[in-house]
Image (cartoon, rainbow, N blue to C red; front, top):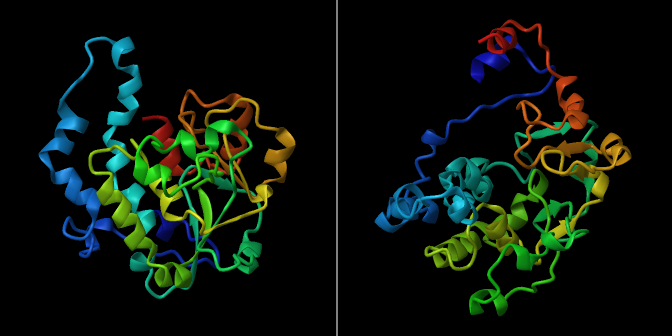
Length: 268
């Protein structure tokens, strides 16, 4: 990646590439996910046991047993002040988004004392808290509203000063430790994100971040065209054969297919 940016300098922007292996503080004595991954029970759950004999019998469990949900590259989002200790505010972007407009305006958004600025996703019932968390568990039912509105990762503005004041990483650690046996939620970083930033998320105007281009064939074309950021969340990424054709051009128009590296990949 360093070589890519050396050969393709991004104008006036400053690029700083970091290696997760260089974060010596990110170890199993500090990070619950790493500690849990070392446990025999977790290894058994994700890598060995209970593999279904038929696809139909195991389809409900397959995605919950995908080890990608334990990747530290996913969970690093809960350690932003440690990764960037000198920053007061940071704009978080996922790797499956396209930036279509200037995002400078996000820096002046008043988060009103909240930590996370995000676009809410509660227009559909399956994006409320009860679809992500286990409300039969008293720890969840006592602390959260099942009808609370979900929000999206992918484009978030975080106030890192407020983050540190409220010990957001500590809150995340607390709940991740409580979920070692997977009874509070099953997978991913969105459920612990919803928990960690509960009551601490400021809703952004929806045109900042339009989602669903990786799974929803009915995203409104006008919304896509007006969006500052579009997000190919879901399995149908624009660089894959199974991408939805109607959305692919929003990504491909930025790809320099005549670049020697990309040309070589395309013909590999």
